[in-house]
Figure 1 (cartoon, rainbow, N blue to C red):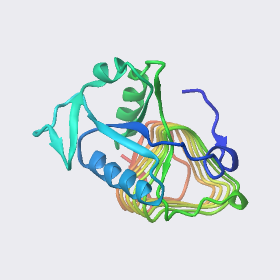
Figure 2 (cartoon, one colour):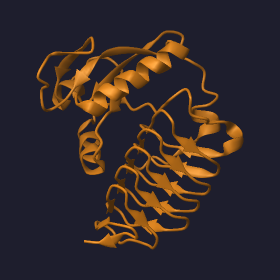
Figure 3 (cartoon, one colour):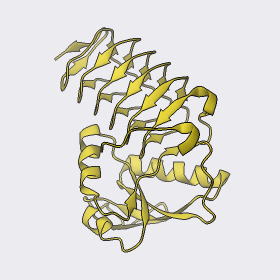
Length: 231
């Protein structure tokens, strides 16, 4: 995924709504998939934008009907879709989400960015947000922030001024990123983890739940504790 993030002012905030709801599938039939289903329905309450067609997952769920939505098959089935289809990849792991997106290569598939209607995203905030991002309820983004492609901000996350989150970063509920912090591609922050101002985390690094990164962390490490230490 080499597409640069697009300024929010042109790609999300002021984009015209479709004239009719567009078909949308959710890849990932687990807990996050059900949460994304709620997010899409909340968006449709504000404006009927999406026509939910069903779930896809390489691991079939226990039941074919999940909160009123059918399980329709695997990534291969999704690639075989005969018509244009929007896809939300509801996979929490940065590494696994990267692998799923790499497999969804059919030209008729696209990856919309979904932002909860209660999240402030105005042009004066100067946000840049890439394709396929998920920004869920209770998140706060301040100003001059850049999110790459397929970034996940789970419930109640905060991102401060001038922060950069590269492609496939994943923030679990109530994670916090300080001003001018830099998260390289595929960084994963556990629940209630914090990266303080101006700290840089290398690609694929993991910060455990409740940990606080007070200094730079290398790529592909796992760090835990307060202050966070590499293990």
